[in-house]
Image (cartoon, rainbow, N blue to C red; front, side, top):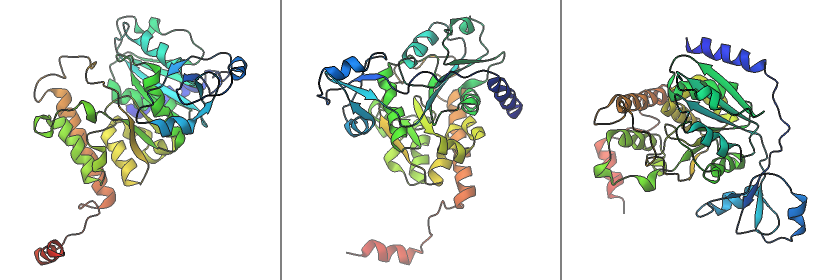
Amino acid sequence: MYRTRLKQTQRASRGQGREQGLKQRSLIKSPYSKKAEEKREQEKGGESLRLPFSGHRSIAEAAAEASADGYARLALQGSASAVVTASNEAATLPKVLFELGKLPLREIIVVLNGCTDGSFETVQRDPRVIRLSFPMRLGHDVGRAIGAAVATGDIILFMDGDLPLPAEELAPFLLAVDRGADVALNDISPFLPPFSRQDDVTRSKSYLNLSLGRPDLKANSMTAVPHAISRRALAATGTSALVVPPKAQAIAMVHGLNVCAPHSVNVLRGNRIRSGNTGAGNPVARLIIGDHIEALGEAMKIMGARLGTTRLSRSELAKARNVP
């Protein structure tokens, strides 16, 4: 059923003429550029964004081209697409699309699923926006997979329709992938409680990363938006793997792709409360934990049951432990 929907979506998308007239650039406020005033006059158009450079100066400087009076250009080497999933998000979807419109995106793919509140009508008539509408609820994960199958950009940025974020909070994920990362995750570590007070979902995310040799990623996961992936990552994982985000992340790590968490956006505070995502052992929590178990199983298929580790005897372990 899922593959059928993908094929139908791809056929529908090919029938639409894609507008590529917008340049892959926009003006971004930067405290690091000091060139002359004339340059600004030559660079008319585009939106002005204030990038959160703290802790990410190297990314910003590598991808930005200095311009006039404190501005820098967000000049992507490759093209970028955004995928937004929405189910009855008429109140927030226009705000999400407004911020995405400030970024140098080739296309913005909106996957509307199970909408009964007029979300379809709220999507502005922008030449970059591609609307895909499904009468049934697909969920964020299936919606992202469908959107990724349609996307043509070298970079794919994933967002949810119920979570408006300023464009300057999204730009670092585009910059990270454009610079060479394959998967750029949202670093939610600063917003998490100590391990003793973390829930099972958070611990399952940390355990997956630890098991695959990436303890530095902590609890950061493709289950959280915003995040971005490269075309190479999509080719390695396959579009269908995006239906189970931790599985796609595990495949990317097992294949040695560049997975990083370049920027922190507090999406926990603005996460929409629903009947299925509150309380211990709620359906959403059980689903996410199951996804991480499936991700570990996929990694074991590729690397073996011990995930590439060797088994030492007790005597060998004792010798290694006692080495000065």
